[in-house]
Amino acid sequence: QVQLVESGGGLVQAGGSLRLSCAASGRTVSTYAMGWFRQAPGKEREFVASIGWTGNTYYTDSVKGRFTISRDNAKNTVDLQMNSLKLDDTAVYYCATHRLQYVYNGGRSAEQYDYWGQGTQVTVSS
Image 1 (cartoon, rainbow, N blue to C red):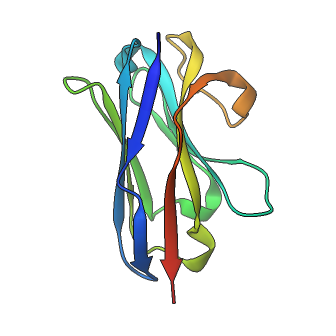
Image 2: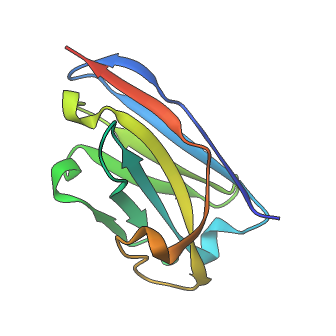
């Protein structure tokens, strides 16, 4: 059974930083593309970042240069370092694992990911 558990969310002032972590069990993150998505109140879930099985990374334009996705194969975790946070970054953040192994680019569509964590709230205040 695959489980993903996010942690690290919280309340931070604009311009601050947070580091989210996603711990996986039942699936080896080193062989799957992993993604981070977010959903703000009243909005649809949107792609934030992904990391392919070879380590290549992809970001949505609004977070490029501010967010960094990384993977720790020994711990079987995927992290999202978020710097220079803005009010618009407020959302529930979800990690997800791609449905196929050995994918270079997991893509931006949530439909390509088959297991999801429960989400962690990130609130950026002014």
